[in-house]
Image 1: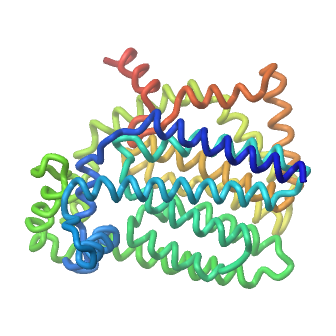
Image 2: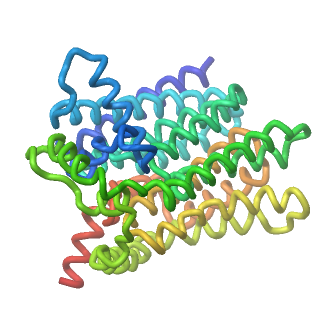
Image 3: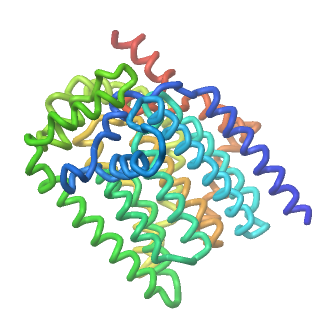
Length: 398
């Protein structure tokens, strides 16, 4: 009973933390990049990133309001973000209830770290209403299925919907779902259902990725003007849109060279980021080395997949420029898989986590100060890693 009461208090305090972080970093605006994506719709064909705009246009038809205005897009983005955060609080509460009482503190620490990274992330001006918000909603629903080991058939559906929202899902978000499915398949006595769900999910998402990247732009030149007009209508000024997203997703043209200045910025900020976050990177590498060392057969494969799952971000890092987002999703991946494996009473991961805690205790008299250190650098943005990192970049390079 005492543990249940403590868990309730923890979730209440976590909710207050999330509310404070969200309020502190709230951007008060949906950028033209994000409003442009609401103009994409399947009325133009089965185009890339068309699901959100299609769903929004459907709501516009059935509701007695003209939703095709910036004000309504803004309210939709606020509602989606609030829904995501409510889902996260419910998810964290479920994690606390599902974990072994002996691991209650470890689970709480991991949840706090995830929360510090996550709650400020999706409310900044760059991220408010971004497709990432809708992807994360679908990911968290999938996480519930895995946590309770129920309705696993929903996972392929959620992942297909995510691909319809943004095909970059295969690099940024799907890794945590596939890694946990692979782990359960390899570590369970009867892992057949996990193999099936893994195979269906990976196959469907791979096919959709190839289609959206290479075959969805056939009529781009015919529809581009109409899409631009719709995007302008939804912007905050009534006449703005993001040309880069139109060029790439509607016309199918490569924007790699056009983003060169942002790539140079991202590379320099990455150097600064590594300087300040090297303790976390070293601790993470030590943790991953420990969970794979000495393993053989299926165990080596299971832990190897867990350890290498974050590398799905590499194609995005090489070809795109949103390094702040990629850093966030890397932290999200490793923290979430660690959380799940602790809840599933994986002794290998639990022992490795205890060793990480001991290492931190040797250098910090109050180990919990590590949370305060992270809070100095959040939230991550899209291209830049955060305001502080960006100010250091300006001081050093400009």
